[in-house]
Image 1 (tube, rainbow, N blue to C red):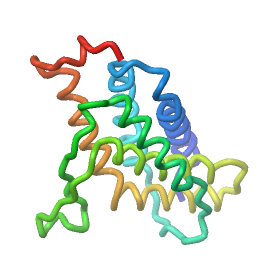
Image 2: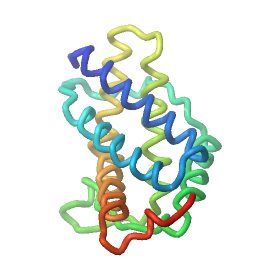
Image 3: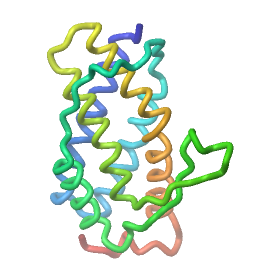
Length: 173
């Protein structure tokens, strides 16, 4: 069983991550990039240390709608502007074949948001078994799907923040 303390710590990061994405329009571009770079690193680390032996069951309820997903994607697209470009990601299922998917940064955020918000909602008012099931599903999705997206976003944001020729410091929004 996953330690309840680990889940509580993860939920705190997940809630902050989702809250930041939901208020993207209130941040400058630089503030958004700086905050998300840190939150993505925390989210990745806190999820990676989950010691779950459980298999994800298919009974976990999902709360994020297509409209919610699109709202997050569009807000991030507006915030990043020209920096919302396509990247190639190799997912674990296609690692040995070398195949990759092409996806824009805003879609990566919306994909991670979907799993993160669902996890946060599943952890509200639930039993230990419900927490375990939610953690197992979140960890499975991390391993197979959104973990590589988080790493790709962190790499992109690292370069935007620290490359010598970056224009992010000079942008107002």
